[in-house]
Image 1: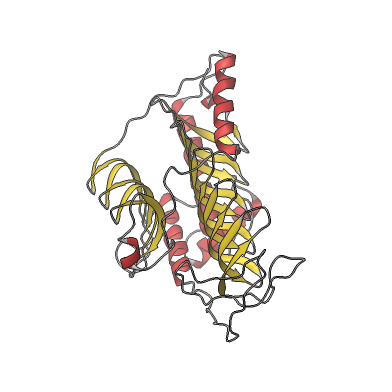
Image 2: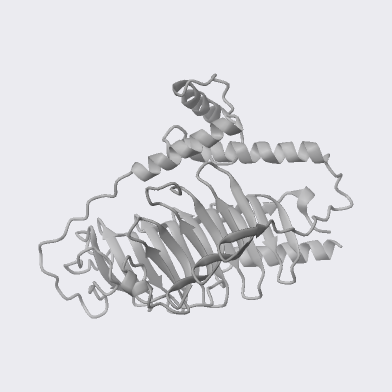
Length: 383
């Protein structure tokens, strides 16, 4: 039994830690795009679409429609603003396993059929280790719920600029102080802990705050573009984005011209790797595509030269990752799919599983649990 436990944990570790994961579908040409004419021509590929009303889709497409695995962000200024759907699509509609998260914090998870919710999907029961005492159900549920409420509170307070500590679900001095400040300015008793109703209001306030943030102005360079050295190409404009082409030459020490800012350029390295995307102050910043010589690829957001924000990793050996990054590491909500069909859906921190997650094996077995710094909590292990 010990060997089985080790085997399962090793499988999960390989899935999450190796550089051998990728999407089966190729990247759509001229992705990301906001052109309807472009994305309606995509077929059997993976891309990023920003619609005219502001909604954003990241995922797979077929015959010009959302089809396969994807994430749809409702950002348009209407009654759906702030909602998110993550899951399967067919012919442009929700179809298959999916999770719809409302702006007020409510969640609807289960099976969808052509845009309509059918039923909640049942999961396999968790097997408790014989040597581990089974906690009382009510106590465990309360503890898990408290952890999740605290983590969500930390995230919302962080978005509003009231909290700068760790998003670990632990009630500390910083979190309690930040909560009390928010409660006071909203007319609530300053208890330092929010109720579920208060949390719904807090998260809605955070979503509204994000929506009001204005993007930085994109200033076009007046200097005409120059051709870069053959070994480090500086051409741009091939991806169909809205920024002007970068101009100038590469600096031999830094591999980029530090004058490149608010523009789009192409950087080819001696190793065969290549970057096409946006720059700011001489660094990768904004939307971009980084292609590795071995066939791997990252498509998504960058900040100060590092992966930061929403992104999709395509690896050379057969699995894929779709999710959030922070300072170059997988951080936030994400989904790993391995070539053999195993899948991890859940939270990550500094590149490691951390928080609530679900691991689905290719044979249909499901394991749910809570991770901490890459390790599964003892009472959730298989035996």
